[in-house]
Figure 1 (cartoon, rainbow, N blue to C red):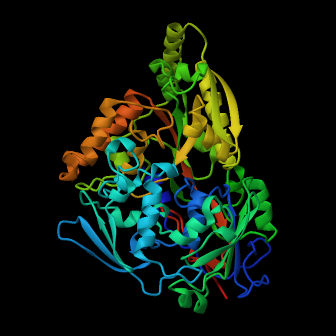
Figure 2: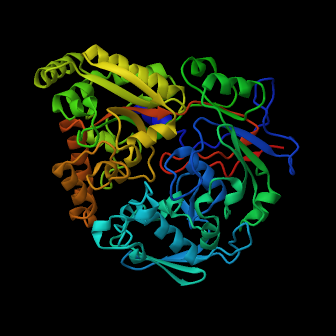
Figure 3: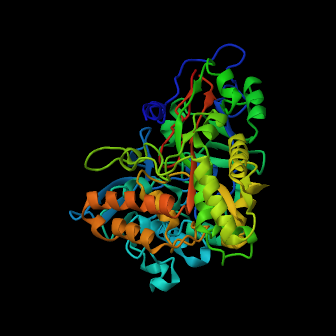
Length: 562
C-alpha cells in the first residue's frame, strides 16, 4: 500500500520548467514554423476514435475534446472543479438546484455566442435513445431530474431532463438528490455544449473531420489524419484567449498516434516527440533520463466475461455462464506477475475499484483499504474449479480472449500473460486481437456481445466508486457488455444511489463495499487484473500537463520554456 500511495503522489505532477539540454531531451517543442513558434508534439498511445462528445467512449478522444471544447467547469491541476464557460453559479440551500451564468464573452469559433440552449440541446442529444450514446446513463448518475430518459421504459423523454435555459446566458439544472461530484462531472465531455444550428447543418457529417466541428475551448482542431496525427492551434475566440496569447502556452499541440512504444521512444530520442510512454525494459533503461516520471493512473484493466449465453450463439460464451468456469478464471491469474512483466508502474488489481480513487467519508480510509483484496491467485484452486466445470459441461473449455492491438504494448503483454495463466489452469485460450474500434463493436450492442472474454479497461469519470459500480448493473445496457444480471448486486447499488445512501454517507459506502464483493468474489462476473501505470519521459522544456486520477488528463495548459 505504501508503494502504491507513493506512486500516486505523482498523479497530479506538473513537469518542471527547466530548459532542455543534451542530445536526448526530446525536441518537438520550440521554433517549428508555426505562427507563434511554440509547438509541442506529444504521443497519443491509442487512436483518436471520435470527436462527437455524445459518442466518444475512450480516453484519447476525451483528451482531444477537452483541448478544443469547454464545459461549464474544468478541472484544475489538483482535479478540483473550477469555472470555465460558467462565470459563476449558485446552489439552492437544499443542494438540488444549480443556476449557472455563462460568460458574456464565451463564443463559438464561428462567432456564435455560447448559450444556455447549447447545453440543453447537447444534454438532450446525449440522453436521446436515438443517439445511441454509450454515456446516456451519465445524467442519471449525476442525479439530474429524469436522468433515466435514455430508457424508453422509464416513461420520460429527453425534454423532461432537469435542465432549463432561463435566458440566453442563464442555465438551471435540477437534481433529485444532492451530489458531491456534480460539479466535477461538468468538466466531462458528455456535459459539454453543442451549437444546435451547426450540428443540424452538418447532419451525419458532424464531428467526422476538423472542418465539421466548431469550438469553444482554448484550442481549435486544425488537422485530423486518422491513424497518424491530430493537431490543435490556439483559439482566438476562447473567452480566455488573451491569457493564452500573452503567456508561454503552446501555440500548437500535435498528437502523434504511435501505439508501438519502441517506435515512440525512437521518435522522442530523434527530437520528434516531447512525450513518450514507456513499458517493459524501456522503463529500467530510462529511469535516469531527464524528464522521466512514473505514476499510477486511474485506469483499471479487467476481464469482461460474457456471462449471459443468450446474447450470442458462442460455445465459449455459453461455458462462461458456468460459475465454476468463472471462479477458475478469477483464481488463475497471478496479477503480481502481470504487473511485473508490464514494468511501467502498473500494480496488481485488488478489486474493480482502483487505489486512491475514493476515501471513506467518515474515516478517510481508501476504498481498497476498507474492502481489502477481493481477488486472489491460487493455482490449485483454479485447477480445482476448472475440473468441476469440465465435469459439469462434459468437455474441455476453450476460450477466445478478445483484446486491443492498438492500445499499447502493455495491453498485448497483459493479454499474453492472461493466456498463459489460464492455460496453466487447464483452459485452452485463443487470442483474438482487434483494433480498439473493432473490439468495442464486437463487445457492445453493435456486435451483439460477440466475445467470450475481453481484456478491457475503465478510467474513472469522477472520484467516486459509483463510476465503476454503475457499469455492471442490469439496466446499464451501454456498458454492461457481459450481460451480468444479479438482483443482489443491483440491490446494493440501488441502496447506495437511490435508497438509504442518499441521506447516509456511511450506508452508501457500505453498500458499495458489499456490491464489489458480490460482483467479484461471489459471482466472478468480472476479473480485475491490473491498475495501469504511467511511465513516461516528458521533455523538460515543457510543463503544465495535468494528470488526473479521476476525469480526463489535460493537455490544454502546456507551457513552453523560453
